Length: 148
Image (tube, rainbow, N blue to C red):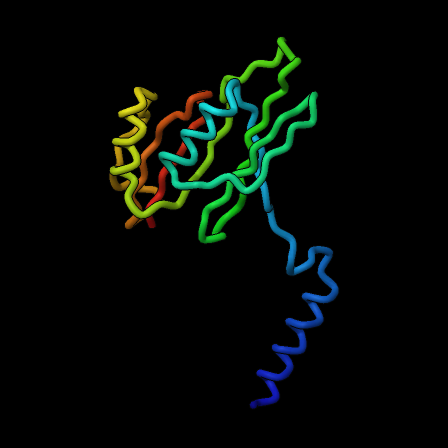
């Protein structure tokens, strides 16, 4: 190994150790508020192929944690506050991006549930070579289906 390669490797290790972020830092779960836990669970398990990893019934808050069976990607937490009558579940300003094998097939599953389709599956100029579709889940969250 050359001296330059050794110095680069050493500098990389030093920067990693001195970095304020650990190499293990990552976003593990994303939670969204939903009107009906069972309806939302059915959407994400039956349409997008996720599975229930865990449920929590805390009285003031109920949650269903969803994961992909292969263990890839982050987890999605469906949250519902059963006693909060003022809470609005409208999907405002939230987009969930799922990397999938066949966006068009999933759009058909979503269409079969009579949910809103914002964009049919097709190429997108901003991501050369990618296929993108946009739809809404039962709570009006934007669901982006991306094939790279």
